[in-house]
Length: 172
Image (cartoon, rainbow, N blue to C red; front, side, top):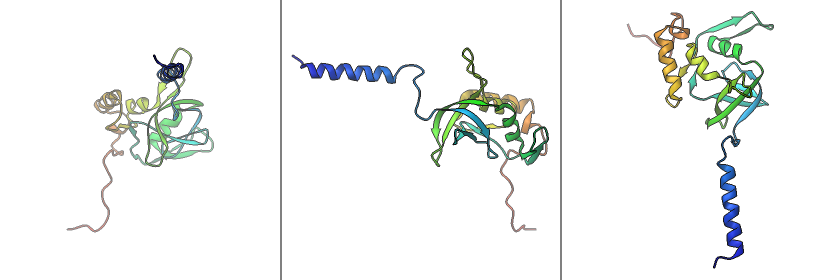
């Protein structure tokens, strides 16, 4: 016959597992708060750097946005990102970068009845970001649509999504 302590341990174990498996249980790396877009395309949330998961912001040359004071000059992709990131952001960690920062899927405009807009998906859909190999399937589909409609970096001849040419000695 099992002892009372073994039964109590079994019940405690089941309660612990049930608590961990509850939908909506917070993950330790999830971050939320007021966000500021950094010049490298990361978000600063509550003093913590968070990178968008599954997207690459291609270099598109420095552009200046004169709608804000002080005037901000940075990559066009970062300027587009800063236009939609206003205020509170909810980020759900998917991975950790080599430097130990969370790489997350982040949302703006979240309400009780709407999860909000996925920042990475928005940037890919508008042609300002590329989907990385580990990105959600949705990002890859949105990138193909942006490319087909020639929007964002896919429509500007001055932008390049390929690696820069090596500079050095030229052979003639």
